[in-house]
Every structure is written in structure tokens, then in C-alpha cells.
Image (cartoon, rainbow over all chains, first blue to last red; front, side):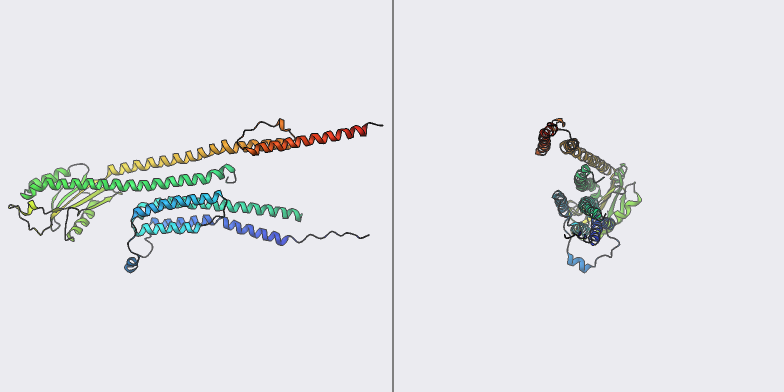
Length: 167
Length: 275
């Protein structure tokens, strides 16, 4: 008669640590939207002052850049951009895709500030860019926060199961 | 808060709709402001031109008293803040009475710019609007017209484009009031859109999705506690097949329980029977 010995369970502590590390990484990622929103607010504060803290561009660089586009064209571009960006983010949310493009939106909004600045229309149109920027980046932050919190929830469930195994 | 299903559905819609409406309102306000400002400047330019035309005869006849009277009378109007006629060297020749401090710099800038200009046409005009202090200023050159240069009484050389400059500044209070009213209405409109979006989306989602889900959840709890399919509250058809399938499952469970009971009872009879 052979005596059956119970096989020892593999050590699950490394796996637990992996899951915990992943949760920390996801927590960091979940706040990226807010960081970009804060960056945009800082940029907007500079734009509100018409970038007067920056040294003026030399005549050579100004000549190389050429004349800024007419303000009414930038306005239309801003309307098209704002509408498309909101639709794009809502589509990402609806299909539960990984949030992407927050930095790109920050770049586009910064470019709009610069275009208005060089076309001398920033003072009149500052609040329009600020409102559309807050909307786009606010939606994006919400999507980022929501998406990564779902992932954190999943990982917490895995961690809970692992803890049960340990007990 | 954001873990709530209703909040998750409403927050993105509210941010998107309200944000875009506010952005649209701000942009629309900028457009309307530009249009109204250029309209006001055009109107003032026409008024300035009318004043120049009305003084032309007096100017040709060098009737300084009449010119001063015209300028002074216009200056007594409550919304006229500044009215002056300059000669070709930029020296004030005639002046109205209401002259606030803030206006002189704008007017001096205009006159200095005119003095550095070589050629003047009908379109040569300078204007400035100060929304913060509520002034609109328009400066025009007084052109050397053929009737003037050929006049025997008061001769000017044909090569002189401008005989002097005229400047007028009026209060832009009515324009600022209209713009303030527009801002206020747009704010009210945005707040209304915000409430309608939140209210509308909440009502629609609650009626078509959340209440049916809550009913289904209640039915599932009842079924888990052993209530038969026939004993479950009637449910609506808003969740479509999901509701039907759930009731079908509960019905199948009830039938299976009955079959097990039926199978158990003959065995019991057999066990209890022959003693």
C-alpha cells in the first residue's frame, strides 16, 4: 500500500507582489488625465497673460514664421477640432478602448493658443479655447480615471482570491 | 459617487454637451461682439463724415465762429466725450467741451499717425474702442476736395491730400450694455442646457434602463429565495429577451424541483410501505 502525500502549493507570494505592483502602476496611470489637465491650466494661465513672461521673438524668427493666419480661420478650425475631439473621446468611452491621445490634445490646444497669439486674437478668444480645452481634457481625464479604476478593481479581485489561497 | 451606474452614464454626457455649449456660446459672443463693435465704429465714422460735410461751407469761407459753434453744439451731447478739429500740423483749431483724460492719449496717437502718413484717401480713418473704459474714438482726415482746391476764396494746393484732421469720441455705454445683456442671456442659456442635459438623460436612462434593471434585480433576489416563477412580480418588456430568459430559467428550475420531488415521493412510499 502506497501512502499518497499532498503536493505542496507553489509559492504565490511573488504573484501577489506582481499584482500589487500592477495595481500601483494602474493607480499612477489613472491620474495622468488630471496631470495633463493641470498642465493645461498652467499653460492657460500663461496664455491669459498673453505670454508676456516669455522673451519676444526676434524679427528674423518672426519673418521666418510669416504672418499668422486670419483669426476667423482659426476660430473655425477650433470649432471643428473641438467637435471632433469630443466625438472621438465619447466613441473611445463607448467602446471601452484604452484611453489615448491626452498629450496630443494638450499639444493641439497649445498650438491654438500660439496661433491666436501670433495672429493677435488671443485676448478675444482666450475663454473659447479654455472652455473647449477644459471640456476635452475633462472628458479624457474622466475616461482615463474610469478605465484604469476598472482595471484596478479587476486586479483587486485577483489579489483577494490570492489572499484566500494563502489563508 | 462615480461608481454609481447613473453617474457613470450622466457625467460624460453632461461634460460633453455643457462644455461644447459653453464653448459655442463664448465663440458666438466673440463673433457678435466683433460685429457689433464694427457696426458701432462704422456708424460713428458716418457721423464724423456728416460733421465734416456740415462744416465744409464754413471751412471754405473760413468762418471760424460757425465752425466753433457746430463743434461746441455737438460737444454738448451727453454721449459725445471728445470732439476736435486739427490743422495740417496737428494743432488743435476747434474743440468741444467734454474731454476726459483717458481719451487724449488715443487721440494723440491717431494724430501722430496721421502726421506720418503721406497720402490720404476716403478710406483713411483710424478707430479705437476701449471696452474697459467705454469709449469709441474715430479720427478722419479732412480731405482736399475739388470744390475746395478750386475755390477762389480759400485756396489750397492740389497736391495737399488733407487739410486737417477731425476726431470724435463717444461713450460706448449702450454697446457695453447690449454686450452685457448678451453675456447674461448666454449664461442663462448654458445653465438651462446643463440642467436639461442632466435631467433629460437621467429621466430617460432611469425610465428605460435603470428601473427595469432594478426590477430584474428584485426578481432575481426573490427567485434566489425560492419564490416560484408564477409568484414573481410581472415585469415590463424594456429589457427585451433578458427578462424572458430569466423567467424561463426560473420556470425550468421550478419544473426540475417538482420532478425531483416527484421522484423522491415514490421512493419514500417504497421505504415507508412494507414494514
